[in-house]
Image (tube, rainbow, N blue to C red):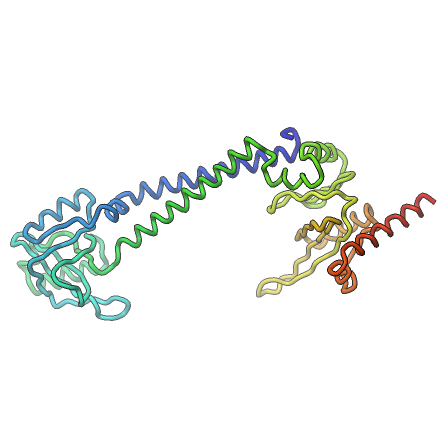
Length: 334
């Protein structure tokens, strides 16, 4: 089957699946690299610190350990308040060890002197807060550490979201890679090959389709062979034996706020398999004309009576089509 167009399509599909799997793995590796410090802090932190030696914070920060838990003996209010969600619900505090001073932002209702948060150097409020400290307590301002302890914005949930993203990418990569590998080892497990099994051996059907590509009619992505009709589109490959087609009709609809009119053609075979393809009006006309030329006995069009018969009694519908075919063939032979 590998020397047929459907075999080549299967190989191309497997390649694309493998490529997508590699893209997922590469994206996961990229996220791990970019967020490695973030995940490390979320999993290993918070790192304990007390205000007896705030120099420990500088050491931690220098080693990308910025999720900390401060155990302070005493916190000093600055009188500066901040907003969160439009309300004055945060305040700025100071902790000191006599040589260094740490600026802290936390909720008004924080409990005790233990504050958990992240060390930030680029917080949008930092410049204003530092200036306020300088105005009220110049000595404390001289000892300020170059970062603020942000105790308001949650930290761990972002890491959990990152981990979930990594799990999703890894899962998608594993699934896509497994499909590509299994379908490469066994091409008959591919949906394209499975779609042919209802007609018999996929290898034999694929060879027949390949042979019919030499002489046929192509309308858009649909191809009429001598005995087969197939369509290759975004939804995969649809294959029909021409003799099995019993009904074909045009669909017209309107979509979008701009009321864009679209058309499509739909075919149904005696086994209930169907296919609908959206196309330009000229392509729909050409397809229906080709069907009428090749299968003049096929039901062409749709109305309430035809729809009711197909819905209520498919066997009678198919019998009527077969009777018309026999009559037309008898007339041709006569």
